[in-house]
Image (tube, rainbow, N blue to C red; front, side):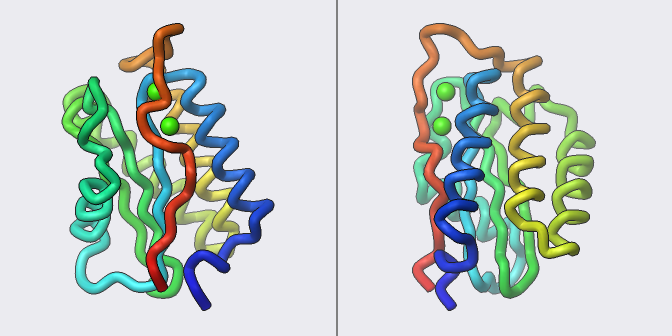
Length: 146
Ligand code: CA
Ligand code: CA
Protein backbone atom coordinates (compact mmCIF):
# COMPACT_ATOMS: atom_id res chain seq x y z
CA UNK A 1 0.00 0.00 0.00
CA UNK A 2 1.26 3.44 -0.90
CA UNK A 3 1.73 5.75 2.05
CA UNK A 4 -0.72 8.01 0.29
CA UNK A 5 -3.50 5.49 0.79
CA UNK A 6 -2.88 5.19 4.47
CA UNK A 7 -5.27 8.04 5.12
CA UNK A 8 -8.65 8.59 3.52
CA UNK A 9 -9.12 11.85 1.62
CA UNK A 10 -11.46 12.89 4.40
CA UNK A 11 -8.71 12.37 6.98
CA UNK A 12 -6.20 14.26 4.88
CA UNK A 13 -8.64 17.16 4.71
CA UNK A 14 -9.05 17.03 8.45
CA UNK A 15 -5.28 17.21 8.97
CA UNK A 16 -4.88 20.06 6.49
CA UNK A 17 -7.64 22.03 8.12
CA UNK A 18 -5.94 21.51 11.51
CA UNK A 19 -2.79 23.05 10.01
CA UNK A 20 -4.78 25.95 8.64
CA UNK A 21 -6.40 26.61 12.02
CA UNK A 22 -3.08 26.37 13.86
CA UNK A 23 -1.52 28.85 11.45
CA UNK A 24 -4.28 31.31 12.21
CA UNK A 25 -2.58 31.68 15.61
CA UNK A 26 0.99 31.92 14.49
CA UNK A 27 3.27 32.86 11.63
CA UNK A 28 4.99 29.50 12.19
CA UNK A 29 4.60 27.05 9.32
CA UNK A 30 3.58 23.48 10.03
CA UNK A 31 3.91 20.61 7.57
CA UNK A 32 3.21 16.88 7.68
CA UNK A 33 5.09 14.26 5.70
CA UNK A 34 4.00 10.63 5.64
CA UNK A 35 6.19 7.77 4.53
CA UNK A 36 6.01 3.98 4.64
CA UNK A 37 9.62 3.17 5.39
CA UNK A 38 12.69 4.94 6.61
CA UNK A 39 16.18 3.53 6.93
CA UNK A 40 18.08 4.59 10.02
CA UNK A 41 17.12 7.43 12.29
CA UNK A 42 13.76 9.06 11.73
CA UNK A 43 15.16 12.47 12.64
CA UNK A 44 17.81 12.28 9.92
CA UNK A 45 15.19 11.48 7.30
CA UNK A 46 12.94 14.18 8.71
CA UNK A 47 15.69 16.76 8.26
CA UNK A 48 16.23 15.61 4.69
CA UNK A 49 12.54 16.02 3.93
CA UNK A 50 12.57 19.37 5.71
CA UNK A 51 15.17 20.69 3.28
CA UNK A 52 13.66 19.01 0.26
CA UNK A 53 10.40 20.82 0.96
CA UNK A 54 12.28 24.12 1.28
CA UNK A 55 11.11 24.49 4.85
CA UNK A 56 14.27 26.36 5.84
CA UNK A 57 13.21 29.27 3.65
CA UNK A 58 10.68 30.92 5.96
CA UNK A 59 11.44 34.50 6.95
CA UNK A 60 11.50 33.85 10.68
CA UNK A 61 12.95 30.36 10.33
CA UNK A 62 9.94 28.97 12.09
CA UNK A 63 8.99 25.95 10.00
CA UNK A 64 8.17 22.74 11.81
CA UNK A 65 7.79 19.30 10.25
CA UNK A 66 6.05 16.27 11.68
CA UNK A 67 7.48 13.20 10.00
CA UNK A 68 5.52 10.00 10.37
CA UNK A 69 6.72 6.64 9.06
CA UNK A 70 3.65 4.47 9.15
CA UNK A 71 4.94 0.99 8.37
CA UNK A 72 8.22 1.20 10.26
CA UNK A 73 6.45 2.93 13.12
CA UNK A 74 8.86 5.80 13.42
CA UNK A 75 8.21 9.42 14.12
CA UNK A 76 10.23 12.62 14.37
CA UNK A 77 9.72 16.34 14.69
CA UNK A 78 12.11 18.65 12.84
CA UNK A 79 12.11 22.39 13.45
CA UNK A 80 14.10 25.30 12.07
CA UNK A 81 16.52 27.63 13.91
CA UNK A 82 13.86 30.07 15.02
CA UNK A 83 11.95 27.24 16.62
CA UNK A 84 14.96 25.93 18.52
CA UNK A 85 15.97 29.38 19.71
CA UNK A 86 12.55 30.08 21.17
CA UNK A 87 10.61 26.98 22.07
CA UNK A 88 11.94 24.98 25.05
CA UNK A 89 13.06 21.52 23.90
CA UNK A 90 10.89 19.91 26.56
CA UNK A 91 7.82 21.09 24.75
CA UNK A 92 8.54 18.80 21.81
CA UNK A 93 8.94 15.82 24.12
CA UNK A 94 5.50 16.62 25.42
CA UNK A 95 4.03 16.83 21.93
CA UNK A 96 5.79 13.66 20.83
CA UNK A 97 4.52 11.71 23.83
CA UNK A 98 1.01 12.91 23.29
CA UNK A 99 1.06 12.05 19.59
CA UNK A 100 2.72 8.68 20.06
CA UNK A 101 0.12 7.74 22.61
CA UNK A 102 -2.52 8.19 19.88
CA UNK A 103 -0.41 6.48 17.23
CA UNK A 104 -0.13 3.41 19.45
CA UNK A 105 -3.90 3.22 19.42
CA UNK A 106 -3.85 3.52 15.60
CA UNK A 107 -5.40 6.95 15.89
CA UNK A 108 -3.07 8.58 13.40
CA UNK A 109 -5.29 11.41 12.24
CA UNK A 110 -6.26 12.29 15.77
CA UNK A 111 -2.64 12.18 16.92
CA UNK A 112 -1.48 14.45 14.12
CA UNK A 113 -4.32 16.91 14.64
CA UNK A 114 -3.64 17.07 18.34
CA UNK A 115 0.07 17.68 17.81
CA UNK A 116 -0.68 20.37 15.24
CA UNK A 117 -3.06 22.10 17.62
CA UNK A 118 -0.59 22.04 20.53
CA UNK A 119 2.11 23.42 18.25
CA UNK A 120 -0.09 26.28 17.06
CA UNK A 121 -0.87 27.28 20.63
CA UNK A 122 2.77 27.14 21.70
CA UNK A 123 4.13 28.97 18.65
CA UNK A 124 1.65 31.77 19.20
CA UNK A 125 3.75 32.84 22.20
CA UNK A 126 6.89 33.38 20.15
CA UNK A 127 5.58 33.94 16.65
CA UNK A 128 2.15 35.54 16.92
CA UNK A 129 0.02 35.80 13.84
CA UNK A 130 0.05 39.17 12.16
CA UNK A 131 -2.33 40.53 9.54
CA UNK A 132 0.51 40.71 7.05
CA UNK A 133 1.18 37.01 7.49
CA UNK A 134 1.67 34.89 4.40
CA UNK A 135 1.15 31.19 4.07
CA UNK A 136 4.81 30.65 3.31
CA UNK A 137 4.57 26.88 3.14
CA UNK A 138 1.67 24.92 1.75
CA UNK A 139 -0.61 23.24 4.28
CA UNK A 140 -0.84 20.19 2.07
CA UNK A 141 0.20 16.87 3.55
CA UNK A 142 3.02 15.30 1.52
CA UNK A 143 3.66 11.59 1.01
CA UNK A 144 6.65 9.47 0.15
CA UNK A 145 6.81 7.98 -3.34
CA UNK A 146 5.93 4.46 -2.16
CA1 CA B 1 2.43 31.91 7.85
CA1 CA C 1 1.24 26.88 5.89
